[in-house]
Amino acid sequence: MAHTPIRLLIAASGTGGHLFPAIALAEHLSDYQIEWLGVPNRLETQLVPKQYPLNTISVEGFQQGFGLASIKVLGRLIGSVLQVRKILQQGNFQGVFTTGGYIAGPAVIAARSLGLPVILHESNALPGKVTRFFGPWCNAVAVGFEVASQYLSRAKTVCTGTPVRSQFLDEATAASLDLSIPEGAPLIVVFGGSQGAVAINKLVRQSASAWFDAGAWVVHLVGDKDPDAESLKHPQYICLPFYNNMAALLQRASLAITRSGAGSLTEMAVCGTPAILIPFPFAAEDHQTYNAKVFTSVGAAIMFQQSDLTDERLRSKVLELLQNPEELQKMRRAAKAIAVPDSADRLAQLVRDLVEKK
Ligand SMILES: CC(=O)N[C@H]1[C@@H](OP(=O)(O)OP(=O)(O)OC[C@H]2O[C@@H](n3ccc(=O)[nH]c3=O)[C@H](O)[C@@H]2O)O[C@H](CO)[C@@H](O)[C@@H]1O
Image (tube, rainbow, N blue to C red; front, side, top):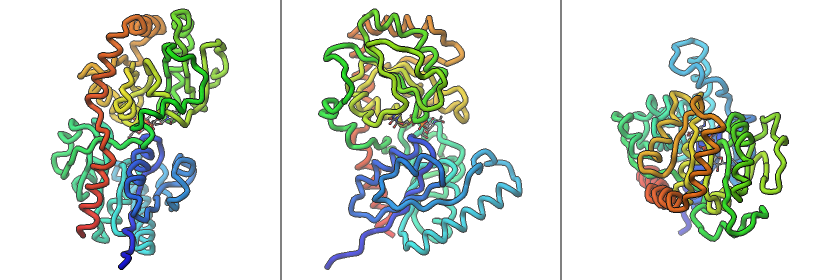
């Protein structure tokens, strides 16, 4: 007898760091009927595969006001909870999965008020405010890094690692790199999270000529907000606003220079990409520094705070690493050692256990 598929609502919104782990999980629940919950005009409208219908609600600005007992914030929260309840009831959903952030508050309250199980995944080493507040209301909080559990003592935490999309796990992906970089040439990949990092871009442009002289190639993903994006030209330099095949690029890279968003870090661990990390200085509660420390503490990466970093320091550190392949190899092994390649399976199993048990 054919049984009806489980219906799951995934509430993930805003940045690649929130969306990609949820997309990876969805790939592992292919027997489920999945719909998405997001907000209009954010990255989900572009990144969520079309097979998952996107429901949108208005929660814009909620996060900024979070914690302030302002009537306006409360009013907005109640409004969004009612919208999510309606979506859950009309869609006959049996559970909710969320990756935290502003969308998680209304999603958790709505689901719990209807008696539906909620699983929250927190990819950062220092869990966000929404996770710390709503975590205890969830049936489980899955964490990407073990260290996050210590900030969630009232929640039921399970360390699953953070899921990456399947192409990151297939070592043959490197062959699909469609950028012409000579085989064997050292490759430095520079990127700044899903939205670019103008400050890193500037430092890299000031430093890169010494790296070219040392024979390295640079693939620079500059984002779409850098006014000087086109200013550097060199035969060993490839500049793009965004690149879709990050798996191939990180597998091929000799070194990455990047922010320390949880998504990028998890992908670099799986691919074994040595990294220089420059945490985004304005990230909430400086959480990117906490993320970076997970990697520096095992020797998988080197961290610089943006305020201390000059083009001179960056230039010489990269040259030093390029001249020391054994050190890069050590970093590569250390990164691989903290990867959780079966994270999507672990998380999917947790979701199945809690949603199907109901
Ligand atoms: C500024 C900020 O607060 N960022 C947060 C945001 O992540 P944010 O999305 O900024 O950064 P992440 O590092 O988590 O993710 C970036 C993602 O974008 C992808 N990518 C990037 C560039 C590109 O050209 N192509 C591409 O596909 C990367 O492969 C990665 O999957 O949520 C994360 C998870 O809560 C946090 O850890 C980050 O601190």
